[in-house]
Image (cartoon, rainbow, N blue to C red; front, side):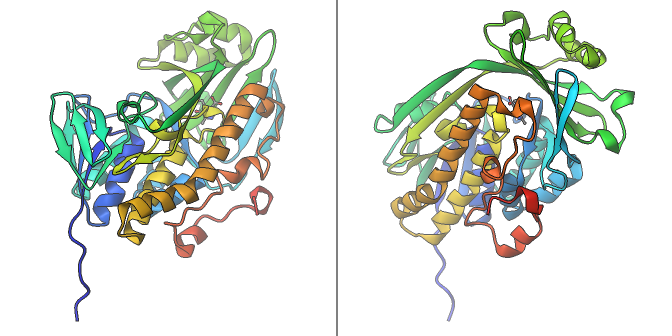
Length: 386
Ligand code: 5PR
């Protein structure tokens, strides 16, 4: 007897960012036909760098992309915190997380999507969705699918077109300039394969998050209060930043020359629920959060992979979406709350902030991850949330 095969189901996905690519790969690998729409004319990322925590790496293992990230990224030896020039803690030695440039991560995901059979259409902009299962395009096209997915970012047009989803938005006083710089000679070598979180709190809070992302690159997250206009500008204002971080003057000099940097203000958007009929949101469209824990993309990746898993477990799409949200929402809401709290209190500046409670998001294991995969990423005892 042969097992009855499910008929091929079809998904239309809006947005080829990290969450859109991930959910497309996950569905295609589970037998769906997937068309992914990107409004830009090119499939690429213009951002700087990113951390992928254990939760994201496990999800990326499920879709076969984690190995390439380990090969192309940097595993930080530890996370150092430095306040006013004094090193106050060195945390997370041995914790399984990786740093990589955003363009590289994007390329690896786009390659995996094509290999999985995802059709990527560029210059194709979605303006909304119909809960009956239709993606509505800017050119007036109405694309029918078993499931339409809005992965169109924090400003999601798909989300905003679905009137029955409640949105709760919160803005914060901080923002961050993100740039990628060439790795200077004095920061080469494995001893600099780490994260250093340089803080100063007076007269106002400023911070340079230094993350090695490869042999040739360093990612700088340069945080400041948005009311500090000179510190919230791209290109980086070398004078303002080197005055506050004199020990990093050579680094700040390079940041001033960096091209392609961007500034973003901290913001949380909570959407309830995450789906309406056959339209569902993944990534920042559903749960944009403060970057204070570096978990925004990781949570989106986890949810994207578990969405495909839930759709495999339950034939009924409504039931799959409900079950998926039931198991991912508490983790996601918790990540938003904790990163908002850290943004408001700046608790991490004092060092030793990565408590087991704070690490609950990073330690989260979704239902899509097998025990065998989980065993590949052991957590040091001091960092366990259980
Ligand atoms: N962590 C990471 C990060 O990129 C940022 C922050 C924390 C990995 C800035 O984008 O607190 O702003 C932060």
